[in-house]
Image 1: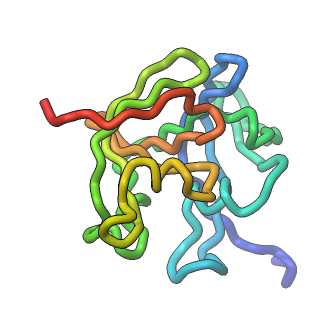
Image 2: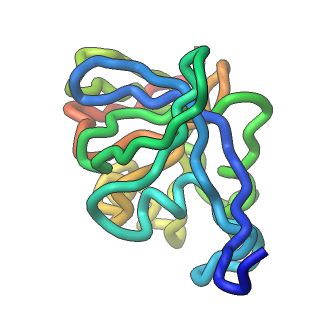
Length: 160
């Protein structure tokens, strides 16, 4: 093995693209992250820079790697028992906001977002102004990562 090779782990996910196409495959994640302790997460990779990222497609045939433009990714659905949102520092004390999101694709999502701000500055509007482009939405079906540039409407809801 080359001394320049960096080992990566795969994280399975479904991507929904701005074209309406949905693809399944894997992200390539590092075992460490420069911005926090622990392994790199999908949201870390997506928020790290702009432009393209590699994604391994698993469409039934031989796997192959493609490059996707981050701006064209509307939604990432993490496959399996993804707990990466819970790894955020302060997750257990962040303010939970139950929300409904309308995406540019016309799809509506409901779930919980966490606002990592001090009391009094933890409103949904504070969440909306956060600098991260990709943000977690925890739903009954699992963890989603939403591209904030594709959120058309965001509203707080009450629990059913």
